Length: 464
Ligand SMILES: C[S@@+](CC[C@H](N)C(=O)[O-])C[C@H]1O[C@@H](n2cnc3c(N)ncnc32)[C@H](O)[C@@H]1O
Image (cartoon, rainbow, N blue to C red):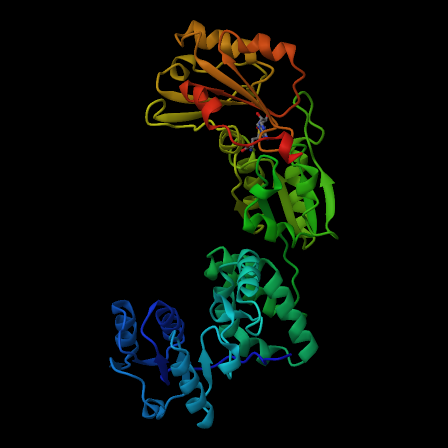
């Protein structure tokens, strides 16, 4: 290891910045975040930099650097493009044993500045020791995506309770186990979901147990999106990777189920449109039973759990049983399919509103409020509409929508099997009858469909 990472407390400490340009400004912003008092010296100083320096309580010297500027400084950064000056600053600082960084010149530095993932008080530093700052930045970008934004709050929450736990659990190993359970369990999830009071209650419950361990399960109702794994949210992925049990639908692609924690028990609760493989009540009961056993239960649902997903029914049971739960939104099929087929759902010239309608009612009929659905300047999206396609087209025409109104059928949208058929209310049923169509499919009706030719960008074949 060429450099040992250390975390420097600069609060209230005077730090010298030599240089007055944009690079100096970036360094000043960093030092300011850490509470340093910044003194800047340069012949020309950027106005924004001056403001940061003033805010930090430091001084502005618009003149050339002098060795005496180093007096009483805790740290020095040289950010100038004058190599001779940079060398001078480095030499002077090193002679006085003051840590010095010269931007983009590791040879002149006694310390380097890492790329940072900031979830204060949690801070992750990534350094290439000055060899490849871009590589360090790319790695940082990856970390940004996997470290939840709310880790800072979680650290503060844990910090405030550390003393209590230490007083209650003497044994170091047991104490560590307790914290591991808290920080990976429902308490942590509640903190990160913005429910600190509920988290505190649960924490107290767990601390009061004779052997304080995590005995309370939780259910996560997770929207898995329309099929393409890239469309999962960070939150969905994180919860999936913490699951003990995963209950999933037929609509959730295998690649997505495979992203769940490898050791998690997988339970298929898929339905077919005609008969339910597992009745809804049974799914509700399974969620409750697994959670009561202390499991983190992920209920993966296609699209968004609250859009034609029966998510509401599933959590009603959890509420009754007082089981903690969270709902994670997903990209709904309408949004995913529309984007991936170049059909904007609203458009200033064509549609001022959009409606999501199910083409398959509870009793199997398609008895919709057709008058509402034929209003002009709106887009209507039919979920589960393939079976009733002919009836839907006939009824829309019978209630006043022009028979040349564009309509698209999108098969397996957002995935490499996506297929888009575009026609009119008059022609599409026949077009569809000639094709081999694979579910799931979505229908989009309205003038916006005419933009598909022009705006389509996703080439399913190239993604296979
Ligand atoms: C029971 S609904 C669930 C909807 C889901 N909760 C959502 O927000 O997308 C299932 C219907 O969604 C539509 N659907 C879901 N994923 C789709 C996809 N990738 N392509 C086309 N339609 C899809 C189909 O109409 C399918 O019959």
